[in-house]
Length: 465
Image (cartoon, rainbow, N blue to C red; front, top):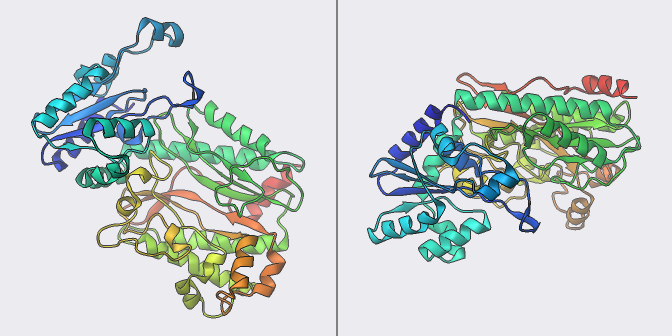
């Protein structure tokens, strides 16, 4: 945990944004894998962590705006808990670490909320995403499941998004740490990958290193020779000469802050000529995007800069044709780049995604109102502010099924050279990704330098054999 003053100040700021009533926060519970006592790795709700800092299952908290009071609801360890789990800090001690004096048992929460309902006190809560919390809210407030999201407090959502979006000095230290450890792990994978290895062997090394760092993975590792599959979590392929490995993985620190990096490298000592050409196109898009990061710049325009750089490079090698501006406006580049250039990051690798993309990545002034393939997957479009942390991650992904569909429709034939594209049918994909903090005058990359250029990567791969 941070110092208790951090959490006290965060709650004070939030309280000032809510006119009246109570703000209800539900922590996460242990979730069974295949029977009740065999649970998945526990991860506390990120907003609960942000305002209270206590990473323990089955907690709830209330900020009473009118009474200027904070209450933590939970249960102290029983003797059975101590026998099986060992003595830990008491809940009272943990609450004091968070600057909270008032602790009540969890079974009193329902009564507490019923009393507030009788007094017609406004109860503000965030959109639930865990089924157990959906059940609680539905039962407590007689709200149908399919109406819970719309019943959440819009004022609270916007207040939390505004507060969590601007990273404090303490948070930036954690995010730097996450990016640095992630970079070390990426370098290790680049050094140890060899033909004949299974993807799962490398994925296991990532998991081991993440745990050894004192944290965990911030999301399931994408470690694959099928880089065109954007969120590929299959690890059963064998590495072969001529292939590329796409490693999209990151570490979460002990306090919950995420790293999110991607590198693509050859299984062989060197990239092939075609791989090198497209890698450099992706790297140009990455460089142009990161160089454009600054307060006041819309990330939508950063994304379009990436798209145009990719389209221009692909035209240079004959995969695209025609006017680049027109091609991007029409969405023809999405044959090669089907997703967004980046997203917000912090306590969540896709920061605050559960609160709603329209509030986290966009604004009332800049609404996300497109269904265009590719652009609809851009999670962040709004104007950047000092203190934002985000990713830059352009890529080229050649998907055979997409080629077949668009070619059969003769779609964007004026922009896509389908005859040439057939030669790249089994190319797979390339992505380069780093994490950035928006500063007063521009941006800085978080963490440490990790090999990016073809020359740097090939030098590392040459020593791996």
